[in-house]
Image (cartoon, rainbow, N blue to C red; front, side, top):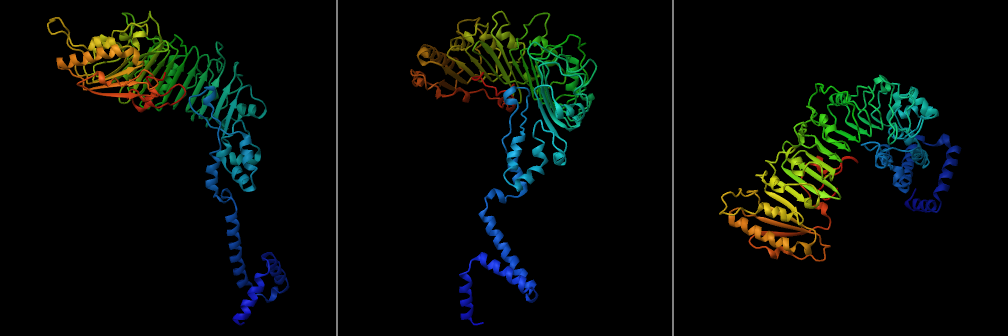
Length: 551
C-alpha cells in the first residue's frame, strides 16, 4: 500500500469515534475469526487495553488508587473516641471506634468494603461489638467492652463464657456487681477498669476468697478500681499502671504483693483510699522497682501511707506527687518517712497560692511535689522541709508569697542551711524578709553570725506591681552594696514583671555596679524551675506538668 493510501485510510479512521471502531472490531472478529492472526491481534489489543486502564486510573480520585496497605493506615486514623479525657475512669487513653464508623467506611465502594472487612485491627477497636459469623475470622476474637449497666443479650454471654475474647473491659456499675460475672478466665485481657459503687457506697468485687476471672489474667497490664471495698484476692503480676480511686479497707499486704510481682510498674495512683489495720508491717521480699517512675497520692494523710513511702523496693528514681496530703508533725512518737526521691535534690521551691502551700524539690532525675491546704495549727514550713529534704546540696531556691500564707516559716533557718546556694528566686512579698537574712553582719559585733549564702551569685526578683515595690527595690540596692563591700558580691540581678502592669517601668536604673536584666512575662509558665523530664511532662490526669506558677 502506498503512503498516500495509508494517509487516506488513517484520515478516514480518525473521523470514526473510538466506540464505533470498537463495535466494528467486535463484529469483524465474530465474522472472520477463522482468517485472523489471533496471536498478533491479541498482543495489539492487550497493549491497547493497558493504555485504556492507565487513562482510567489517571481520571479516578487518588484515594481509589492507593495500595491496600496504605489505605489501611488511613483507616486507622479515623477519629477515635478518647475514654479517659471525660470520665476519669483510667490513667490511660483508650481510643476506640463505634460501629457506625466502620459502616460509613464500607458504604463508600466495594473496594473499601472489602478492605474494612478483611482488617482485624479495625474491628478489634470497635467497642461493644459481637461480630456475626462472617466477621469472626477477620476479628480474631479480640474485643473491647465498655459497660455502664448490667449487660444484656450477647454482651452478657461474653462476660459469662467468652472472656477469652476480651482485650479491654471497662465497667461502671453503681451497685454491687453480680457475682456470676467475671469468673471465666481472661487470657488476653490487658486493661481492666471497674467502678463498683458511688460516693460513700462501696462494694466488693467478689465474694470472700474468690478471684476475678478464676485468677487467670496473664496479660493484664493496666488496672483501675473505683469505689471498691477491699481488693480482690487475685495475685496480679506484671502490672504497668495501677489506679485506686475512693476505695476502702485496702489491705497493704495485698497491694505490696502486687507491686512486688510487677517489676515493670510505671504508675501508681491512690486517691481518697483508706486502708485496713490488719497488716503485720512485714515487707515481702522484692527487687528494686527501677521502672517505677510516678507515685501520685491524693487526699490521704501522710501518716496513713508512710508504710508505702518507706517500702524497700522504692528507689530514688520514683518521683512522688502529694496533693491535699497533710504532712506529719515531727515528735518523739512519730517517724517522718524517708523519701528516696529527695536523696539527691539540688533545687527547692516553696510557695503559697489560692489558700494552699506548695513544696517542690527536684534532682537531675526525679522529684517530690507536695500541696496541702493552709493549716495554721499544722507543722511549720521549715520543719516540714528540714525533716524531709537534705538542704546541703541545694543550689537553687524559690520562695514565693510565703509571707501571706499564714503559715509559720523561718526563712533565716532555711537559707543558713544551704551553703551551696548559688541562685535565689523571690518575689516582692517575701523580699524584705530575705533581705534581712542576706544582709552581712556588722563587723564590730563579735556575736554576729557568718554571712548567709556565701556562694550566692544570681538573684531573681518577681515584681507583681511596680507601684508597691519601689521602696523594696531601694532596700535591695542597699543589700547589693553591703554584700559587695563585705566580699560576697552578687554577679547578676534579674527582675521579672508583667507587661500588663500599667505602672511598670524599667527598674534597672535603680541599681549600679551589677549586671542586671529586666524580663517581662505575658504568661508566667515560661518562668519555671529547671526539672527532669518525668516532672516536666504530663503523663495522665493525675500527673500534670509540674510548675511554680500553674497550680
